[in-house]
Length: 254
Image 1 (tube, rainbow, N blue to C red):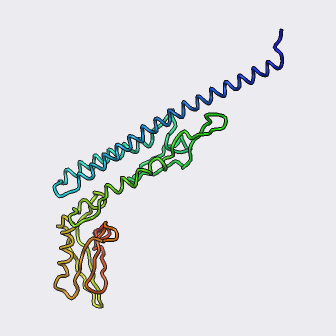
Image 2 (image 1 turned 90 degrees about the vertical axis):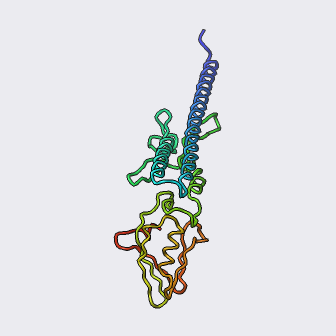
Image 3 (image 1 turned 180 degrees about the vertical axis):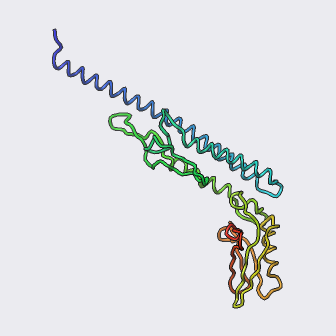
């Protein structure tokens, strides 16, 4: 006997429900796999940042040689590459941290050394049941920006008079040379100050102050209390101006 129309309809409904449940389960399994891989990648990033912080702090101090600083910089560069690679992790050919643009590598390093984010701030989503739509991934902005403030503040300690010039600018240092300093209280006094021999901020302070010692206007150099990351030049009267000399960018770099 042929199957009744009612029974056939119930069979179709049950089959459709079964297939839908299978799809939901597949979505759940895929989401779990993607999130697990994302968590592993973020763990790798955290490890790299902690290692970079430790390396950066180990390079601060007067006992570290230039050769040792170069070696430390190489280690930091390697960890930086590790972070970029973790940010470009893929799952089944799709980038995990590109947001909704899963066919685009999210992080790209330019020729200038800067890393550019190519993804967006959206997520890919899938249903895990009839009513619930959940994200499967993280976008690179939310996933990586969260670790930036802590890492950045730790590797840029407050400036002190004992800070080595080679530790400025995040450990990159500055190319020493001469700068032009002008004190002006109606009659300008300009000195070209040679800073090529200074090793610490204290040395720089001493050389700058000595350049105007005994003159009608004197100069005081100290740490800027507002930022704790820059120098403050205060004339005994009038104004002070600092500029580069020809062939040098030291004033700008400082």
